[in-house]
Length: 598
Image (cartoon, rainbow, N blue to C red; front, side, top):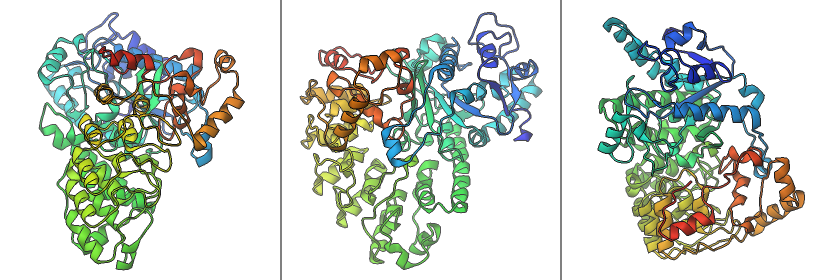
């Protein structure tokens, strides 16, 4: 990265960052700006004034991925910078990371830095750390700056890999702050992707006042670079506001790809796919070197889809070579990502019959790989159902070969719970998929998991059409679909799905009824913190609250492995938002007042 001519610059998160965002004296065009937070320092001027510094090897670095809210500037009014600055202050001063009961049971530990380390961290943000073309004064300098920026953009995977924290800055903003952005928002609808001037997919969605901004379903280029980097085990942190941060769940973005975004410049789609493909090739080489066969097979099977390339049809011998099945006997693998799972993930329906003729196991059982949203016991049918419309042929072929449509042979969740298209629901029901069968682990019905996993309205409607119970509590967690919907803050379909559930006679007064291990954990926490009011006054972290008080507090148990909320760690007096919806919000929605998902 030394050849990037000063591009690997970052700034301190505590003092220099305040100087850079609050009191800039040079704007990107080289002029002065007094009191305008939206006008940022040109990287060259900031570097000369020692606000930007060379990155030091081994220093803690935070990569900030942000929205572009203006036509010529990412943050014309400085609103995003205010949120980022306040978020960092809150993280440094007040955040307390505590391991949950589930994390203690599974042995998984958070890799999020401690507040003392964050205080000394560097921040990498493209608008400041990359030389901008608009900062040049003559044509030759602009051309050179454009070439440098092009080189830097192609090196985004390296910058992400060199960072220890990935922060997505996605507060809900109004496009009206910039006249050009307002016109673009009008032309393209409620949201649109805008390619930055340095020709990369910034995956920008301009929010209107009525639409909540949600990064984690928008397929950011940087986000996929993080997944494919050496630092993929570090959590993705999403900042919705200065006091509202959460860890992103893999299920929110693992099936959303960069090439599916909307581009104002068509050529950028191919360029961004090239960047992702290069990062993916490096990831595959690294996984082979580290002998992580399960992750390697998953990435190779999804390679074409991730990079936006056509489905690749392989011969049997080519398949065995590519996926490292040493012999035909190895095709009979039962645990992990076996041959049928690889074929299902890659979308190769013709290969399924050939593998079955070689006595490959039809229903293998996956292992836990949480960073790619893979849970124990998933079968090839699960993978095909979660791949959307594109995998309709694979799913139909698996079911024709008599694969279990319920996916419960190994105690896994129902295949219907992972559907991402109405076609998948229809196929599974045709082959006797049970629309009300609960999962073994959480005890949730397919409809509950669908709404929690941000399934689109058409998919949810198709399941309800086939008589899914809109008030089913299930066992274990004992939550109705409306409560599951309230869990996932980033669900872009939350309002429409809530309206659909209410129109289908979902009971907004239905209360949670825990059972099994969940009831035990709730009672155990009640013993440890019997005086909730005293705990709140002292500012201690509450892992559980009383679910009978009308809010869905139990989900805090899963803040790292399932729901990943940083905000739950903040002292209670500092943070009032616990879940995106309260029962009062749902009542207002039922009365016809769309209150959004705030």
